[in-house]
Image 1 (spheres, rainbow, N blue to C red):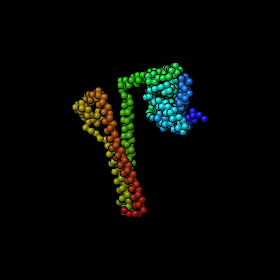
Image 2: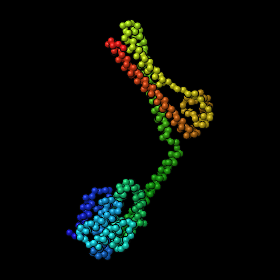
Image 3: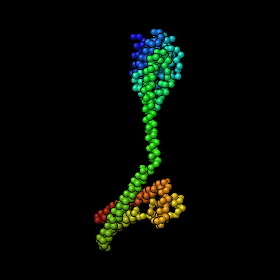
Length: 395
């Protein structure tokens, strides 16, 4: 087995045994592509058989360093090649040449001889491939994975256009004659895609600008909807709280009525003395429940008047009746017109209205919670006391 066959098997096994770290482009397939490019250039350029061997060896090892990451992969690839060639008793001077050719694939390196030119051109053989777009997408996917970021198609195609048209060039006569035309065809494909993307992007920008302008010209319906829905929710919750309080008022009124008509008259008899305390507990809990239920539904009314200075200073919420019910219609009409002229004042008044409605709701539900607790524990205590009284257990 000659040295090239050993190198191919070694690189194949190296990539096979190394887990894929997101290198979708710089893999064994890319290595084969570069080797194929070297073989085509070697056939088209004037190189010796030994120089061809060194170029092919360099092509097999030029990206071997990617098994440990993309940073300084050329140096690691050169070291891997050196170790392999030493193990196979390869000539030291030729080994140094292979390392030099591998290092010449660095983007910042400018080729100094024909061998380095061949190596550089072969590394960019994919620019002249028929499936360049698919190969380019693999490189994009790799860069996104390694940088942990998203590259838009527009950015990628702009970058491709810049590299292919300005930064890259083929060095060898064979590549200029045979690969450059194919590269230019691929460049036209990139240009077509880029033009379409720019047109689409421009159309999107115009649509966004038009939409933004339309939003600025018409009222914010979304804001109005939020206020309307929130106000409806507050009003509905207030109605629910009042209904619950009315239920407790009715139930406890019935309990007191029945106690006064059925139990109280019988407590004069010495034989019913044991019912005095249970009845007292029942009546007391019902009375306290009624008091808290009344407090939860008790309205709070403010002064009902305002001055023009209050309106000019934006201090009055004209959406709450308690702030204007004592004012003349003319004054209230003037104040409402003033408020509607100022969008900020109008929305702030709506915000205040919702805020104070929320405070009222908080007070209602706190008192209602106390009312339910008093009723529940009072009823439990009453039942227990009646049971104990009937069993003859004294208090």
